[in-house]
Every structure is written in structure tokens, then in C-alpha cells.
Amino acid sequence: MFFGHLSQIDKKQYPEAINIALDYLSNTDFNHLDAGRYPIRGDRIYAQVLDLETQEKTTLYPEVHRHYIDVQYLHSGVERIGVAIDLGHNTIEKGYDVERDILFYKEIENEIELIMRPGNFAVFFPSDVHRPACIDTYSTTIRKVVVKIAVSELEV
Image 1 (tube, rainbow, N blue to C red):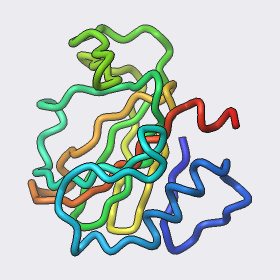
Image 2 (image 1 turned 90 degrees about the vertical axis):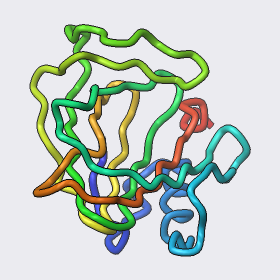
Image 3 (image 1 turned 90 degrees about the horizontal axis):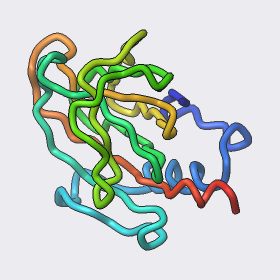
């Protein structure tokens, strides 16, 4: 997992595919885009612009992906994201959905929280369980962008 802010990116720290995502996030005006999916490199790297309401942590299931890396960027609002390393001991709530590349756990052990403010981003690899869109202080609307990167893009 990586955590940072778009105003302080050192490109030497990240693989090329993640730099492509960070460049997209830095150079796109998300105030003028509709919610939806936007290709960056076809299905290998693409962005999802999401308008969400933050929810109580207990109402959201932690998730993992097997074939994609998430670069989650908070454009507006406030959010907490629960995160933990997937050690394989978590109870599965909803089995792996191949089409959506997602598996939900009931709960996760050793969960910590990231406090997200506009400009923050977090990179979640398949070994990182994450629970996005949690309430920080109060429920609010957030706009976030999730850039999905096929794991195979890191092998190039």
C-alpha cells in the first residue's frame, strides 16, 4: 500500500503504471466529468469517477481484488478507509466475483484507518484489504476517483 497527496509526488518511488494513474489524477478536471468509467489504457488501466455517500463502517464490507490494483483518490469531501494486510484468516461474506474482480470479507483483523482529505490518494494491491467510503466525522457526499490498474501492467 502507498499513501500520499497529489501535491507531493516523487515519481521515482512508484512503478510506471502507478505514475500513469497519478498523472491522470493530477491532470484531469474532475469538476467537469460525469460519474462513470473512463479508459486510460483500455481495460488495462481505467478510471471510475464515483459520487458516494459515506457510511458507518459497520455497514460496509472490506474488499480485495485479485487482478487489479486500486489507486483511490479523494477529489472532494472527507472519508476514512479501513485497511489491513490480507493474511488469509478473514471470513468471506461474498465470494469472489470474477466480472467485478472483487471479494468481500465480513470483517478484517488488524484494521487501521486512513484519513482521506481532498488530494489524498492510496494505492491498494491485491494483498491489501480495504474498506472505502467510511464516515469520518459525519456522513457526507464524496467524489472519488478509482484508477484500476491490471496487475499485469506492473510486470511490463
